[in-house]
Image (cartoon, rainbow, N blue to C red):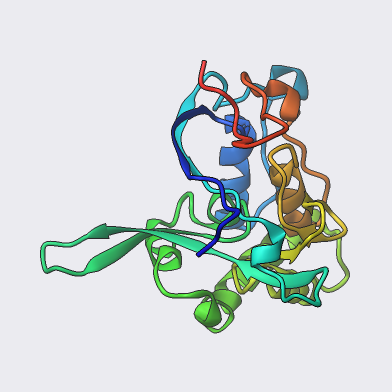
Length: 229
């Protein structure tokens, strides 16, 4: 029993994240079709946050580091993933959403509904064997279109081994940061779309917006998520 854990907080919160719809859809088409990211006449000064002003239902539980560390430890690497499931008429449960790294679905499943459903099922241990070949093919197609790697297939393979299994690495007891160089959890203000889109395409990809586009800002203390306004 965690004596120091705060009671969970559940309810409406401001959406803490941001995405630019034109860039989002263009990225999805590029990885589906094996092309560069076609934005037409769109320019960054037209960027808007699709989530601005929206609210989400949130459940927040704060767990002290000491609950996840052995007495002699000051840090511990873990991999984080989660599933949301629905009860079925047959009495079981069906997974409808699985999360680990951010932006996996926006990159690869916007125009492949079956892949999205498949990725939401199963577990991370199966990811590389099940999806590695397909994701490598799609990444290599975009990189080849940009001409940014002498060996697009080798680059794609290296990226897929970062993306799969689809889990979010974190060292307990350290500040969270999701950047180009390394992934150690994710703070609510990290620009995960820029990071993941750029790594996958092997070329700079920017939404043209960042944390400043969020309507209600994240809080510095528990429960951290923005207030609903």
